[in-house]
Image 1 (spheres, rainbow, N blue to C red):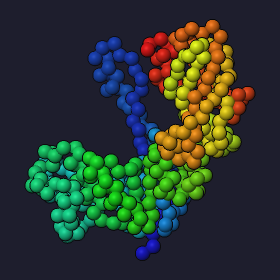
Image 2: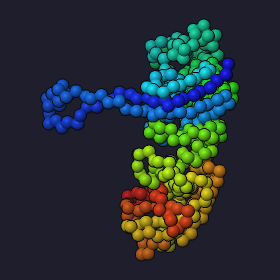
Image 3: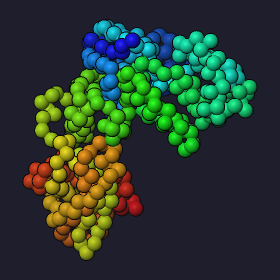
Image 4: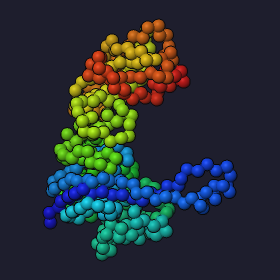
Length: 382
């Protein structure tokens, strides 16, 4: 049987009950206000006209910041949330690794919970009975099969849920974040099993903040922001679009959805992680890159509204940053020097210190994130 996913202008709105803001001087006034001023019901859109397709062989990355709608979209694809409008066509069996404890009952035994979890996965009891022993063995819970679930540790419950959820292979895998299910030994087994499932599945939809992982696994990508689809296509342009979006939101410190024109051209993002003072020269350490992967040459220190251009920038490898953001160039670390006249201590820089980046010194105007450790030093707290 062939597998495919097609969404056409799919939207989801949920009711939200809002209590009007009311200042009460005592308990009686608060109770009277709640009794005679009931909450109003509002419909809040979580997904707004999402349209994309996935065919056999596609590994689709779902990108977006927290609250963008990634988990909600996966639940709509799995049929957990009924869409409010639009059309969705899903061909093939689905396996969702979203909530691996769904269906569990703390008062039931481990063996009984295997059947309960299987029922939540829409599997037949006859199918689950043949898999009980292999599930218990994979989870390392053979000796606890007759124990009540509530007597297990959280790690053991997670291992059991993962073992049950991955005991059956489906055409489509829907996964929210990568596997995190126990100690190192079990993690190795879980990772091997997931790689086998993903390679054997026809379609994989994976939401994760690990951009390097998505770049290594996926061939397609979609970018969500405020429940709207802002890009759908190949993985490399999708990652670039995601970096563009995140850099723009950081630089503008806004929560509004940007227009496409605002994403034109490369943007700069990075972090100032350490600061020190040597012989009157401020040295700043961190990482910086641009959304198109080009080397960033401009760094500026802004102190009390006065800007000081860097007198020298040494680049160094930051494989952790490159891996997390899916960058090809690992030379995104920097050590920059700044000469600030009459500076005797870093505490004199003040709490309003800003670090700006750009393609060169003349247009270094994009604020970088300043680590709390740096902020504490320039405030005199450390």
